[in-house]
Length: 177
Image (tube, rainbow, N blue to C red; front, side, top):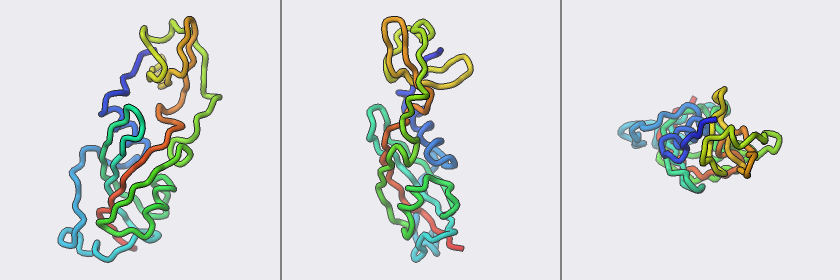
């Protein structure tokens, strides 16, 4: 197994972004929701079928998780983003923002003990400790759950599984059907 350095902000933000919203663009310029740029933005509220452009910022609520910002788009009611986030933005309009805490069940899911595997400590890179993310020969990521004298327990799930996350979502544009 190789150790993966997920303390690097770029990797953590990328992992969070890809998993959280799938279709957002990291590093995208912030769009401004104004009536001059989006004339229809002034009065459009998010309803079923609305095409929504948004900016989301992760708020560091976990040790080692820096804040990160991304811009994306979804259609309300098609479940293209996490259901709790989709529900939270219902009725909002361009220019409004909201802070939303997603429980583990609402984004990565709960920590599942059946995804734990006990391996020989010799299979880990030297110096691996609890919380380190490692990669096996097949490219599968695992998090060091426990590292003992001769054995280690690794958990084959996303590194942030079982953790809540707080995001600030800003509605940039709403196009209603």
